[in-house]
Image (tube, rainbow, N blue to C red; front, side, top):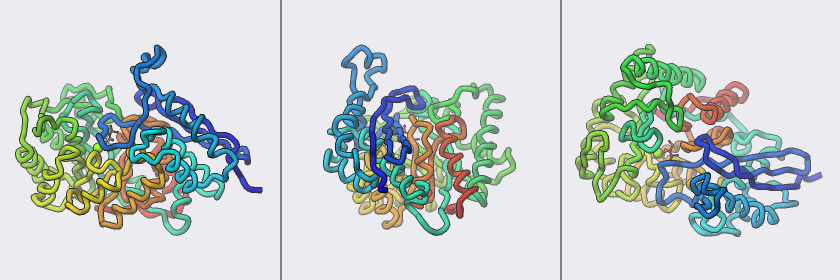
Amino acid sequence: MTTVISNFQGIQVLDSRGRPTVCARMMLSDGSVHKATVPSGASTGAHEALELRDGETEISEKLFLGKSVHQAVSNINEIIRPRLLKLEPNSEKIDAILHELDSTSRHEILGANATLATSLVGAIASAHVRKVSLARFYQPHGALKIPMPMVNILSGGAHAAGALDIQDVLVIPHGAKTFAQGLTWVSAIREKAAELGASDGFMTNLVADEGGLGLPFASSDMACGFITHCIESVGLNPRVDVSLALDIAATQFYKDEKYESRSQGLQYTPEQWSQLLLALVATHPIISIEDPFAEDDWDSWELFMKQLPRPIQVVGDDLFTTNTRRLSRGIKGRSANAILIKPNQNGLVTSTHDVLTQAQYSGLGTIVSARSGESEDSWLADLATGWNAGQIKVGSTHGSERTAKWNRLLELEATEETVFSKPF
Ligand code: 2PG
Ligand code: MG
């Protein structure tokens, strides 16, 4: 007997920042129940798909500072639900229906939180009826490639009340033989950073949105030096075992064609800002740099790529917003050599996968990424693995919404035929 969708419902739930978000719940005729909750960013790009929020229209919504998602939930219940009932769960078909209901580029009619929640649970239920994991749904045969983690140690910018100008200092355990070993290394570095930070007089028991430490270093240079010291202090070799990655999230402090350093009270022209970043790359064991410039400062990106002293990964997050048109422009102009893939920037699972495939086809690195506001779901780990992304960014090793994804990757490595991805 074919399994069909017997019930489908949207629910307003809370994300890891305590803000409302959309959960979609799909019940199948075989009695199984599947759920997916959408994440939410803080340093969001202007070109992302629309996250539909209610605004301060009613008292109950005012209590959530206008961030409630009742309209998106109602779009699931009133508009999407009738189209899905009695259908066989089929990810591509469900996404085609969502596209038919809302073909606007940013999902402005239904809200990308409504479309993504539906699209995700559709993919999860489709894997279930095929009796495979979500990772295996995308790659039925052969060894699964467990992605290389990029792990947050220090947070600043919009995730830690501006503790640092730049948003994240992360580490990549590219010398590890297995994912489990890599995660052990970065976890040790995270704990060492807390220990050394405390002995320097910093508050290290408070964590930022993604579980990172919000240590207020006076400069990015000092922050990079500190993390390199932490790597050495746990007995690992910078550049050989573990290297640094930065997420500058420069859109956040770009104003009137200048990059503003709040910590130093200085403003930089794009050329001066670029020189500052090139000096950081030349000094520290940095192998990846994300959003070094603002989302529409295309010229600076292109120039930076030409001026790099050595080949490192330059990642477009706000620049590309997991959008095929913006990626095409970046490929043509050689603005970056890697892309951050965030499903909620796009709004549908299948078209997010298409953007990843387009990037891989053009030789760009791909990093599947969580958001600063997350849920306890672990589907991201399966998508990154099944899509053969090569890299994943989930935040720190603290916070159950983060460890849900790391632990799922540990589970995949322990139970499936896998190899550890080596993008560096
Ligand atoms: C980013 C993400 C995750 P946010 O900028 O890459 O770190 O942050 O979800 O706030 O956009
Ligand atoms: Mg980013």
